[in-house]
Length: 362
Ligand SMILES: *Cc1c(COP(=O)(O)O)cnc(C)c1O
Image (cartoon, rainbow, N blue to C red):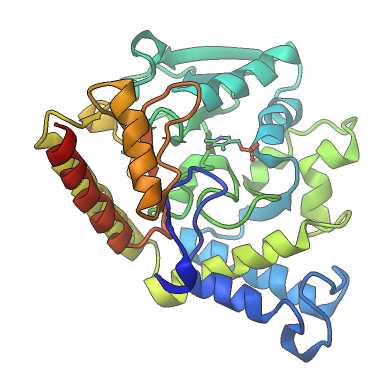
């Protein structure tokens, strides 16, 4: 790789496409002959208007979103969304369904409960340490929304298909798999994603909200915690995270113009994850932790025969230019985060190293 860059398997902040980083680098001193860095231009300038509007237009094209949907850029990470969702959509007497598939779903549920909102946990995979995605879930017909986590970054599972909620709008935390595959947008009342996994640097959360959901919002919320504030002002009620939004714009441009859209991206992601899972399935040395039908194409979690070997594996991989393979501190083991921007060469290099490590230590 160029510039002594490593293959970065970190879960987030995570690797970004090299052409995007190069374009950011080029715009850091003098953006489009403005005489200013992209980090210095006003958010009330035509330069930034073009940035945010292009980021929105590309997002809508990529995901196939029509005019019912608003694309917003908020601060506070996906974690603030856990609190804002029940605050905005669950007035007294209303309730929502939640599916618990891991650490992030658990946190989303906690934030609804803290506010004494009515939420039903209609399914959970906690009984087997969240190694699978629950099936055949009975959702409540009168729920205002059904909340899921489409990809479980820490546990290494992903919804292969979205559940049938009998018309109840799905709200999905897509922090770690947004833009990794095409979407049937009409099932969703809202989608949100912290940018730092799959679409940009840290500091901004993309929120896609459907028009009808906005009618549920009470008018006594603090302005900064009310989605309508950001819809009315094109995400610029206050100073938005300009630089992070600019980076998202470039990632969306890369997805459209270099990758060729989300169907092409999905195919590549299937191929990349397939290389890793197929290799592991053929050994007894590496064991993928998620059930086969629930495996994530983004975060591949696996164990070696002992914790000592896992430590050695992570150390040796780091020495060979593969970083971030340690599992989340809450679960241990190993994890290769292979988001959109991880090139297939990164996976090939990792698999070759895994073979060699097994030969020397198996
Ligand atoms: C990382 C992550 C979060 C937390 O995001 P922040 O932006 O750090 O608040 C939430 N949900 C999922 C699925 C994640 O992967």
